[in-house]
Image (cartoon, rainbow, N blue to C red; front, side, top):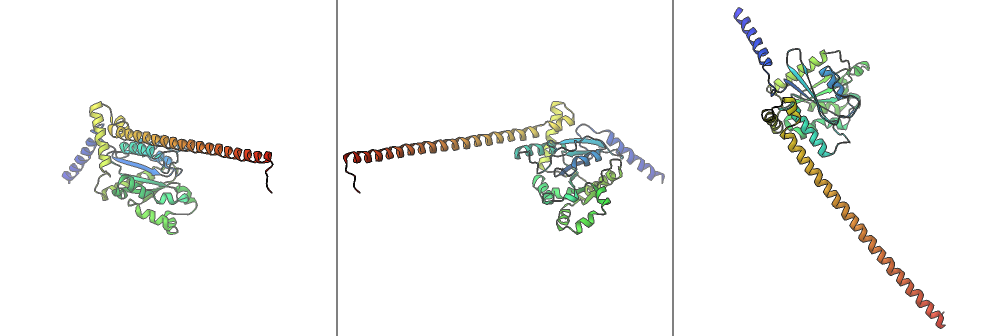
Length: 313
């Protein structure tokens, strides 16, 4: 018995020692990538998870933001808030750049793609979220996808459960079936830390089912390598390297080239339209002149005939 007890103490001390030995290159123990349509309360959910008013609420999020928070068991939890999908103010290239920054902030990969949904406003765009995640991050991302329903206190007050909402809405049911990590419900009470602990527990269980590792692919691995190079070569800490590294710079350069090419194409198109319009105007002017000359000739001829008194009836 004493030996078993002692080995348990040793394991606990080993875990604590491992936690204490974390370097600036180490990613967070639990990384949450928040995804959701604008207006679903995504930033509010992020603030509840990290127990601070870090993410700005009430405005469309354009840039990616990250905030870490210690968990009761000593692990670090990071929340990455993303630009609102279907954001009307972002061009395709701007969205690509922002998503690249999100990838860098949660490299080598997230433990969960947490889709924030407001049940009362479930729409066609919400239904397509899992498909979008798979298109952006790969098919395997679906196994790390979980739905989080905000405004759970309002649902409770109205006597509506998620299960009931799913039963009466086939689209809702189809959406949840694609979230392989299941779902969780949040109310807007920041003092309720149990809902956060329960969420982390569900994430842990999902990660264990997926082999005990975060989700990753070539894109996330390249971001992690770029971060490591930035730390070793530039001598910066991980937080700085996550926000500025060769992976981000390469995508930004490509986006700038694409934007310049698009601008050049638009300018060429406008010039072609202007040249065409000018040519049409010139042709029209020439036709008007010719018509005027023709009319003048006819008038001159008629006048000459009248003067000769040779008009026939």
